[in-house]
Length: 349
Image 1 (cartoon, rainbow, N blue to C red):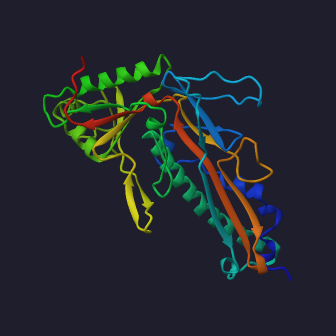
Image 2: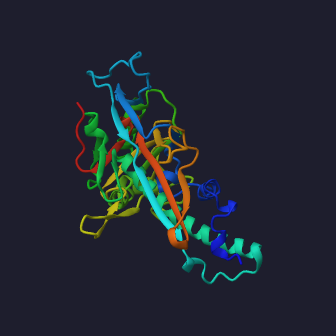
C-alpha cells in the first residue's frame, strides 16, 4: 500500500517545480529590496571580473585565450575577480513530518505533502531573503559581509577609492540644514554625470534621524509641512518624509551575526549616528546572480534567485531538500554612495 512517504518524489515535487515555487513570492525583505534599489543581473560564471575606469566599475568582457586582450585601466590595473558568494541551505522531509498527515486517497496525500513542502520552502526562502538583505545593506556601505560577519571584500580599499562623506552639525541651532541638503545633492548630480534618476533617498540611523527632524531649522519648516506624507514632527507614523529635495527615512533594521564562539551579535544596517544618501531609479546598483552548483546549470545564466534540488535519504528516511543562492550586490559607480555623519561641517575651499 502506498503511503505519504512514497509520494515525496512524485513529479509534482520535481526540482524544477520546487524551484519555481520557492521563487514565486517577490523579494521584499529589507528596505533595499522594498525600494528596488538593486537590479538583478544574471551571469553565466561563478565570478564577476570588475575593472575601474573614471571611478566607475565595469564588467570586463571575456576573451578567447590567446586572442585579443582588453585594454588595462587606471594605472595598468586591468581588474579584479570577485567570486559570487555561495549560500547553501539544507533541510529534509522525514517520517516525523508526515507521521500524522491524515488524508484519504492519493489526492488527499498529495495535498498533505504539498503543505509540508510549502512550509519547508517558506522557511528556507525566508532565510535566503534575510541573507540577501544583509548583503544589500553591506553593498550600500561599500562592503560585502557573509552571515558570520566575515568581510568578503571592501569596495574602497580594493580599488583604492575614497568614500564620499559629509558631516552636518545637527547640534547647532544655526546650521542651515536645507543648504546642506543642496550641497550633498549637488555632489550627487556631479557623480551621476547627467544620468537621470527618480529622486534622492536618505536612509538614516535612529540618532541621525531624530537629530535631523528635531533640528530647529527643520522643525520650523515642518510647521507648515505640506509633503506627500504625514508630518514626522507631529504625526504618529512610519518615519518617512520629504524635505528640501530628498526623502529621508529612519532605518531600524539589524542583523544577528554569529561569532566564532557561537554567540550572536546584533549589527545595525545603518549606524545610529549616520545616514546613507542614494540616487533612486538608476542602473548603477547591480545584484549579480551566478548559476547554481550543478552540472546541468554550469555556465548557464540563472533564471531564478534560489534553486532547489532534492534527493532520497538512505534507509528510506525521507527526502533531502537542498537550496542555494549565489548573489553579489554591488554599486558599479561607488562615488554615488555618500555617507552623512553628525559633526562640524568642513569648510570647502
